[in-house]
Length: 255
Image 1 (cartoon, rainbow, N blue to C red):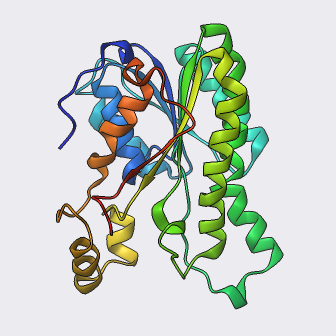
Image 2 (cartoon, helix red, strand yellow):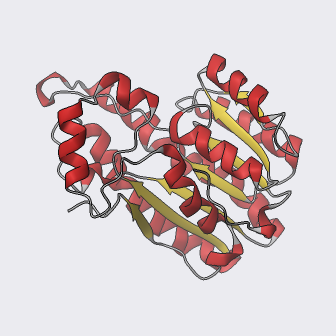
Image 3 (cartoon, helix red, strand yellow):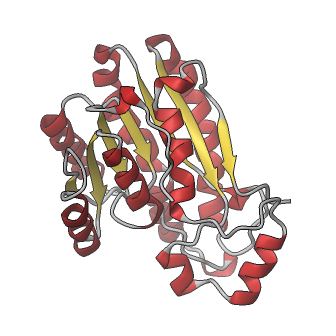
Protein backbone atom coordinates (compact mmCIF):
# COMPACT_ATOMS: atom_id res chain seq x y z
CA UNK A 1 0.00 0.00 0.00
CA UNK A 2 3.02 2.31 -0.20
CA UNK A 3 2.36 5.29 -2.52
CA UNK A 4 3.43 4.81 -6.13
CA UNK A 5 4.60 8.41 -6.59
CA UNK A 6 8.33 9.11 -6.85
CA UNK A 7 9.87 12.33 -5.53
CA UNK A 8 13.36 12.61 -7.05
CA UNK A 9 14.43 15.46 -4.76
CA UNK A 10 14.08 13.12 -1.74
CA UNK A 11 16.77 10.79 -3.05
CA UNK A 12 19.81 11.06 -0.75
CA UNK A 13 18.01 13.64 1.40
CA UNK A 14 18.91 13.56 5.10
CA UNK A 15 15.66 12.68 6.89
CA UNK A 16 15.04 12.38 10.64
CA UNK A 17 11.91 10.69 11.99
CA UNK A 18 10.98 10.56 15.67
CA UNK A 19 9.14 7.45 16.84
CA UNK A 20 10.16 5.77 13.60
CA UNK A 21 10.38 2.19 14.84
CA UNK A 22 6.73 1.15 14.89
CA UNK A 23 3.22 2.14 13.86
CA UNK A 24 2.88 5.14 11.58
CA UNK A 25 6.53 5.96 12.23
CA UNK A 26 7.73 2.64 10.83
CA UNK A 27 5.64 3.19 7.69
CA UNK A 28 7.25 6.62 7.31
CA UNK A 29 10.73 5.19 7.78
CA UNK A 30 10.01 2.63 5.07
CA UNK A 31 8.37 5.15 2.74
CA UNK A 32 11.27 7.59 2.82
CA UNK A 33 13.86 4.81 2.57
CA UNK A 34 12.10 3.50 -0.54
CA UNK A 35 12.47 6.99 -2.04
CA UNK A 36 16.24 6.63 -1.67
CA UNK A 37 16.47 9.01 1.28
CA UNK A 38 19.05 8.64 4.03
CA UNK A 39 16.81 8.03 7.01
CA UNK A 40 17.70 8.17 10.67
CA UNK A 41 14.98 7.48 13.19
CA UNK A 42 14.71 7.89 16.94
CA UNK A 43 12.79 5.49 19.13
CA UNK A 44 12.88 4.19 22.67
CA UNK A 45 11.73 0.69 21.68
CA UNK A 46 14.83 -1.23 20.70
CA UNK A 47 13.54 -4.61 19.51
CA UNK A 48 11.03 -3.49 16.83
CA UNK A 49 13.39 -0.78 15.65
CA UNK A 50 16.23 -3.23 15.04
CA UNK A 51 13.87 -5.62 13.24
CA UNK A 52 12.72 -2.76 10.99
CA UNK A 53 16.31 -1.87 10.07
CA UNK A 54 17.09 -5.51 9.35
CA UNK A 55 14.05 -5.87 7.10
CA UNK A 56 14.57 -2.64 5.17
CA UNK A 57 18.33 -3.02 4.74
CA UNK A 58 17.64 -5.72 2.16
CA UNK A 59 15.25 -3.58 0.12
CA UNK A 60 16.59 -0.01 0.03
CA UNK A 61 19.67 1.87 -1.16
CA UNK A 62 20.45 3.35 2.25
CA UNK A 63 19.67 1.23 5.28
CA UNK A 64 17.94 3.35 7.95
CA UNK A 65 19.94 4.27 11.03
CA UNK A 66 18.25 3.59 14.37
CA UNK A 67 19.23 5.79 17.31
CA UNK A 68 17.77 4.90 20.68
CA UNK A 69 16.60 8.02 22.51
CA UNK A 70 14.13 9.11 25.18
CA UNK A 71 12.52 12.22 23.69
CA UNK A 72 11.56 13.53 27.11
CA UNK A 73 15.28 13.92 27.88
CA UNK A 74 16.22 17.02 25.89
CA UNK A 75 19.98 16.58 26.28
CA UNK A 76 19.70 13.00 25.00
CA UNK A 77 17.45 14.19 22.18
CA UNK A 78 19.97 16.80 21.09
CA UNK A 79 22.78 14.25 21.18
CA UNK A 80 20.74 11.83 19.07
CA UNK A 81 20.02 14.52 16.49
CA UNK A 82 23.72 15.28 16.36
CA UNK A 83 24.42 11.61 15.68
CA UNK A 84 21.87 11.58 12.86
CA UNK A 85 23.44 14.65 11.25
CA UNK A 86 26.90 13.15 11.62
CA UNK A 87 25.73 10.01 9.81
CA UNK A 88 23.84 11.62 6.93
CA UNK A 89 24.73 15.30 6.81
CA UNK A 90 22.56 18.26 7.87
CA UNK A 91 18.95 17.20 8.33
CA UNK A 92 16.72 18.80 5.71
CA UNK A 93 13.55 16.84 6.47
CA UNK A 94 12.35 16.51 10.06
CA UNK A 95 9.27 14.48 10.91
CA UNK A 96 8.02 14.89 14.47
CA UNK A 97 5.92 11.75 14.66
CA UNK A 98 6.49 10.32 18.17
CA UNK A 99 3.57 10.41 20.59
CA UNK A 100 2.04 8.54 23.51
CA UNK A 101 -1.75 8.40 23.39
CA UNK A 102 -2.38 6.83 26.80
CA UNK A 103 -5.93 7.21 28.05
CA UNK A 104 -6.37 9.10 31.33
CA UNK A 105 -9.25 10.29 33.47
CA UNK A 106 -9.51 13.96 34.46
CA UNK A 107 -9.77 13.13 38.16
CA UNK A 108 -6.57 11.07 38.12
CA UNK A 109 -4.25 13.53 36.36
CA UNK A 110 -1.52 14.89 38.64
CA UNK A 111 0.85 17.78 37.88
CA UNK A 112 3.68 15.28 37.36
CA UNK A 113 1.56 13.19 34.97
CA UNK A 114 0.56 16.30 33.02
CA UNK A 115 4.16 17.49 32.69
CA UNK A 116 5.40 14.06 31.60
CA UNK A 117 2.62 13.75 29.04
CA UNK A 118 3.53 17.13 27.53
CA UNK A 119 7.21 16.18 27.68
CA UNK A 120 6.46 13.36 25.25
CA UNK A 121 3.63 14.74 23.14
CA UNK A 122 4.49 18.43 22.67
CA UNK A 123 7.84 19.58 24.02
CA UNK A 124 10.08 17.47 21.72
CA UNK A 125 8.42 18.94 18.63
CA UNK A 126 9.93 22.31 19.49
CA UNK A 127 13.35 21.13 20.58
CA UNK A 128 13.88 18.89 17.55
CA UNK A 129 13.01 21.84 15.31
CA UNK A 130 15.37 24.04 17.29
CA UNK A 131 18.17 21.50 16.90
CA UNK A 132 17.87 21.14 13.11
CA UNK A 133 17.05 24.75 12.21
CA UNK A 134 20.63 25.99 11.85
CA UNK A 135 21.58 23.11 9.56
CA UNK A 136 18.49 23.70 7.41
CA UNK A 137 19.27 27.41 7.18
CA UNK A 138 22.83 26.66 6.04
CA UNK A 139 21.49 24.10 3.54
CA UNK A 140 19.20 26.73 2.02
CA UNK A 141 15.91 25.35 3.30
CA UNK A 142 14.06 22.29 4.50
CA UNK A 143 10.78 20.83 5.63
CA UNK A 144 9.51 20.20 9.15
CA UNK A 145 6.42 18.03 9.48
CA UNK A 146 4.69 17.89 12.85
CA UNK A 147 2.21 15.14 13.61
CA UNK A 148 -0.88 16.31 15.42
CA UNK A 149 -4.15 14.35 15.58
CA UNK A 150 -7.84 14.69 14.84
CA UNK A 151 -8.50 13.68 18.45
CA UNK A 152 -8.75 17.30 19.60
CA UNK A 153 -11.04 18.15 16.69
CA UNK A 154 -13.59 15.45 17.54
CA UNK A 155 -13.69 16.18 21.29
CA UNK A 156 -12.10 12.90 22.33
CA UNK A 157 -13.13 12.49 25.98
CA UNK A 158 -10.51 10.08 27.34
CA UNK A 159 -7.14 11.87 27.08
CA UNK A 160 -7.34 15.62 27.80
CA UNK A 161 -3.58 16.11 28.28
CA UNK A 162 -2.86 14.39 24.98
CA UNK A 163 -5.47 16.38 23.07
CA UNK A 164 -4.17 19.62 24.59
CA UNK A 165 -0.70 18.73 23.33
CA UNK A 166 -2.02 17.90 19.88
CA UNK A 167 -3.85 21.22 19.66
CA UNK A 168 -0.67 22.95 20.81
CA UNK A 169 1.25 21.37 17.94
CA UNK A 170 -0.94 23.27 15.46
CA UNK A 171 -0.04 26.57 17.13
CA UNK A 172 3.63 25.60 17.29
CA UNK A 173 3.55 24.71 13.59
CA UNK A 174 2.24 28.12 12.63
CA UNK A 175 4.69 29.95 14.88
CA UNK A 176 7.67 28.03 13.53
CA UNK A 177 6.46 28.53 9.96
CA UNK A 178 6.36 32.28 10.47
CA UNK A 179 9.83 32.39 11.98
CA UNK A 180 11.59 29.96 9.64
CA UNK A 181 9.81 30.76 6.38
CA UNK A 182 12.25 33.52 5.39
CA UNK A 183 14.94 30.81 5.35
CA UNK A 184 12.84 28.65 2.98
CA UNK A 185 12.05 26.22 5.77
CA UNK A 186 8.46 25.02 5.48
CA UNK A 187 6.62 23.86 8.60
CA UNK A 188 3.37 21.94 8.28
CA UNK A 189 1.31 19.50 10.31
CA UNK A 190 -0.49 16.26 9.53
CA UNK A 191 -3.56 15.25 11.52
CA UNK A 192 -4.31 11.54 11.03
CA UNK A 193 -7.65 10.01 11.84
CA UNK A 194 -7.96 6.58 13.44
CA UNK A 195 -5.10 4.58 11.94
CA UNK A 196 -4.97 0.85 12.64
CA UNK A 197 -1.53 0.41 14.11
CA UNK A 198 -0.65 -2.67 16.12
CA UNK A 199 -0.93 -0.59 19.32
CA UNK A 200 -4.44 0.59 18.46
CA UNK A 201 -5.61 -2.92 17.66
CA UNK A 202 -4.09 -4.33 20.84
CA UNK A 203 -5.40 -1.73 23.26
CA UNK A 204 -8.54 -0.02 21.99
CA UNK A 205 -10.04 -1.40 18.79
CA UNK A 206 -13.25 -3.36 18.92
CA UNK A 207 -15.19 -4.51 15.88
CA UNK A 208 -18.15 -2.36 16.89
CA UNK A 209 -16.14 0.80 17.53
CA UNK A 210 -14.17 0.46 14.31
CA UNK A 211 -17.28 -0.17 12.22
CA UNK A 212 -19.00 2.86 13.71
CA UNK A 213 -15.96 5.05 13.05
CA UNK A 214 -15.47 3.93 9.46
CA UNK A 215 -19.18 4.46 8.80
CA UNK A 216 -18.64 8.16 9.56
CA UNK A 217 -15.82 8.45 7.01
CA UNK A 218 -16.57 9.55 3.45
CA UNK A 219 -14.22 6.79 2.30
CA UNK A 220 -15.38 3.59 4.00
CA UNK A 221 -11.96 1.94 4.24
CA UNK A 222 -10.06 1.19 7.41
CA UNK A 223 -7.04 3.50 7.58
CA UNK A 224 -3.62 1.86 7.69
CA UNK A 225 -0.20 3.37 8.54
CA UNK A 226 0.79 3.36 4.86
CA UNK A 227 -2.11 5.74 4.13
CA UNK A 228 -0.23 8.56 5.85
CA UNK A 229 3.03 8.13 3.93
CA UNK A 230 2.08 9.85 0.66
CA UNK A 231 0.97 13.04 2.40
CA UNK A 232 4.23 13.15 4.34
CA UNK A 233 6.35 12.59 1.21
CA UNK A 234 4.49 15.40 -0.54
CA UNK A 235 5.10 17.83 2.33
CA UNK A 236 8.78 16.85 2.47
CA UNK A 237 9.35 17.31 -1.26
CA UNK A 238 9.62 20.39 -3.44
CA UNK A 239 6.17 19.50 -4.80
CA UNK A 240 4.88 21.52 -1.83
CA UNK A 241 7.41 24.36 -2.21
CA UNK A 242 4.98 27.15 -1.32
CA UNK A 243 2.89 25.24 1.21
CA UNK A 244 3.60 26.12 4.83
CA UNK A 245 1.83 26.84 8.13
CA UNK A 246 -0.91 24.37 7.19
CA UNK A 247 -2.50 21.33 8.82
CA UNK A 248 -3.50 18.55 6.43
CA UNK A 249 -6.19 16.26 7.83
CA UNK A 250 -5.95 12.66 6.65
CA UNK A 251 -8.98 10.89 8.10
CA UNK A 252 -10.96 9.47 5.19
CA UNK A 253 -13.33 12.45 5.40
CA UNK A 254 -14.61 11.78 8.93
CA UNK A 255 -17.91 13.56 9.48
